[in-house]
Amino acid sequence: MNPIHSQLQDRVLARVNDCMQQASEQLAREFLPPAVRFNQRGRIAGSAWLERWELRFNPVLLSDNEAEFMAEIIPHEVAHLIAFACYGRVKPHGPEWQHIMQSVFQLVPRTRHRLNTSKVAPTFSYQCDCRTHQITLRRHNNMQRGKQRYQCLHCNQLLSLSVPHSTRKVP
Image 1: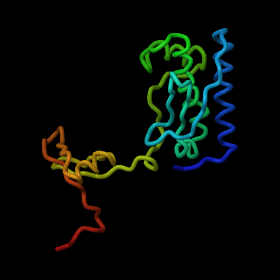
Image 2 (image 1 turned 180 degrees about the vertical axis):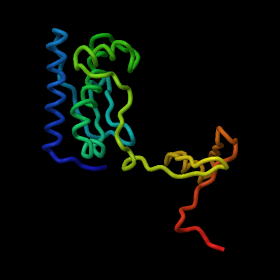
Image 3 (image 1 turned 60 degrees about the horizontal axis):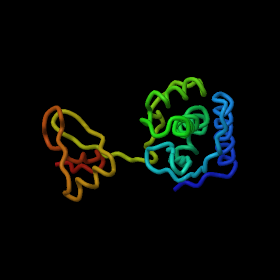
Image 4 (image 1 turned 30 degrees about the vertical axis):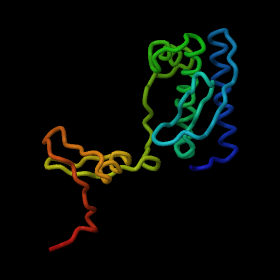
């Protein structure tokens, strides 16, 4: 895990509190500040744990993308908590959450971030007759262990691990 420095953690906490305050003012209702953790892993930038009233952020993605976190990802996750507080358990990106994103935070309610995740989620090149496929680490490991096989949806050929150009044997 990539530890983040305390000043960045402080900026995230301040932004979370600003978003909570903004929601309180817009909705004329008080919200307790959530617990904030920096232990999210993988490709996920952040997550909201509703019953725990907790937000989790990916420290690697945060360190590399602070501006995007401040502008969109933190309000996105706070909106999940606010939707839960106002409406109870609803669809994660349903109309209630979308309403909060638009009316409280004046943001387009995007369900997925657009961050580069190559640092936190490597992919592996696999080949078929018609193209190269990028396979996740989990699927790659399952294929290497013989637990799973995947085939191309276009040509129906089983995928095989591409050999990097520098390691190919020349006849």
